[in-house]
Length: 137
Length: 137
DNA sequence: GCTAACTTTGCAACCCGGTTGCACGAAAGA
DNA sequence: TCTTTCGTGCAACCGGGTTGCAAAGTTAGC
Image 1: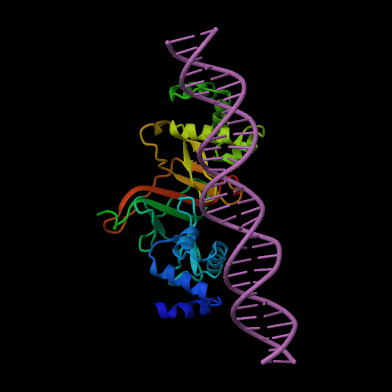
Image 2: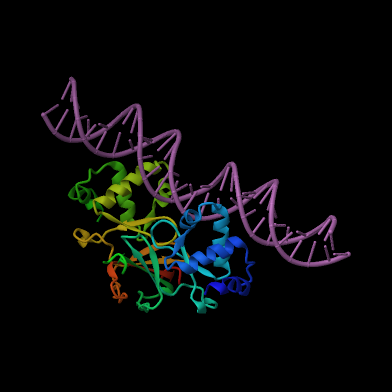
């Protein structure tokens, strides 16, 4: 994967600057969704605003998707490869109450629900909270 | 309902002050979940901190439950009558993208999902986004 | 190579929702 | 009544997110 990080940026029409490569690399290596402050503390000597704009750029170019897991801070995670057309993150997010990490569960099917009369459903967002495999020793 | 508002507070061991009665009345009258800033603007001449603490008290005493609908501000809505033992808000929340209101759908059953091996599920939070019955003309 | 135009970055400041400390006044208990 | 507790208002703070601006870096045209 790593050698293609730069290529991926170019493919998505994002100039592969040093910062962006580093951020994207972190996103690749980490199975957890990361927040802006996660990033800031992750490499200590970088500007919050730069990282913020990097994430924003990545989101606009559909490289990552935004997750609101109810922890108060927005998190981001890599999009699936087939995310190009449908940018909605059509999967369940799991929040571990022990390690506080947020994980995308790409393989779990989203259930269908029936809304009351005359309600129109556009997007279903599911957040599962509990204990992740690593913490559930 | 209205005559019992004061009684309900007493039952839940909350002193029925004027502020609290007013706030609870608003929560009863409004089918939508309300945020702190909703409340502040709703009766214009009240302190944000007082309303904040009122909501906090109500939540602690299990009169209302907290909803994070991903709009950036926490909302609150009345608990169901049988909420005493299990305070988790075990229902789907619907966010209308037109009128921006958040509605508790108490009658929709929460689907069950299968997590990967060794994940333990404690809470499932579902937010449906779309157009509500009133806006879906 | 050299300048002009554009992009990215760093810094500071701001915004807003949420939260807390503190002091005053009201209510409850002895 | 006196004391204690509780509720409220005010101001200030905190932290995540966001923006304006200028410096530094990059790209393109000549």
